[in-house]
Length: 325
Image 1 (spheres, rainbow, N blue to C red):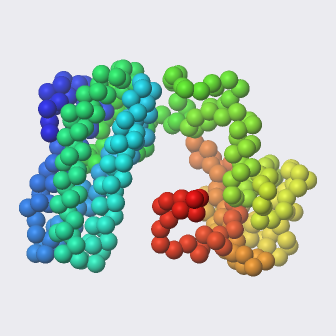
Image 2: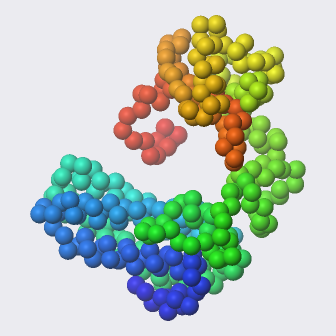
Image 3: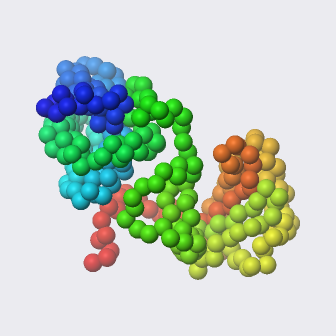
C-alpha cells in the first residue's frame, strides 16, 4: 500500500503528495483501530473512530476539486471518471453506516463496516500504485505550488493544519487577490477576474438573469444599485428602482423592518435576517445578508426572495433523471 512512499519521503515538507501520504498513514491507523473494536461492547469508542474516519470526505473533495482538474489539463481524465465514482460508492457506504449508527443498529453496522474499510484500503492501494506516481510524472513544480490555497478551502484530515507550501508563502492569499497566471482552457479576453474564475459582463448578466432567485443589492448609502431581471420574479421590479432609497421600495407597514435590518447590519450586530410567508397561494422565503469587504467594512445588503413552495414538498431522494425519459 506504500510502494511509492520512498519517493514521497524525498519530496519537500508540505508538498501536496506528501500530505496525502501523511493522511494515508492516519487512515490506515484508524482502520486498524476500528477493526479491533466491537461496536456491540464499545459503541462510543467505535463511534468516535468512525467519525474521524468519515473525515476522508475532505480528502475526496481535495482530489476531485484540486488534483483531478490538473490531471485533466495534462490529458489524464480517468481519475475524474473512475476514481470519482469510487469516492461516491464509499460516500454511500458512509451514509448507510451513519444511519445505522444513529439507530445503534449493531447488526447493520457489522454487516457494512467491513465493506467500507476494504473499499478504503483498495482506494489507498490504487492511489499509491497509480494515481500519485502518475500525478508526479504529469504535474510540474509550478502546478504543485498552486495547490495550497484550494487545499486549505477543502480541508485536511490531519490533526494539525499543514504549513503553507511552498514555504515562502507564509500568509493566506484570498482568491480575489490571487493574480497568478495559469494556463486556462478558455479565452479570458473581455472578461473580469472574480474571486474564482473569469466571466464577461454578458455571462454575468446571463447568470444573474437565470438564477431562480430575486436579488436586489442595496449599497452602503441605502440606495438600490442592482436587481436581477428574471422571467419569474416573485415581486415585480422596474428600472425606476435603481438609485432609489430602499425605504421607498417597500410598503409603509414593513419599511420599519427593512430599516432596522439595515441599521443592525451597518452596526455589525447582525449579518442575516429571514422571513417566510404565504403570498398568492405560494410560500415565499426572503433573506437579507450583510455585505462586507475584506476589511469587514459594511458595503450594503443583498435581499434574496425565492418561491419555495415546491421545494418544501420534496421528500426522500431523487438522484437520477427519471422524469427526463
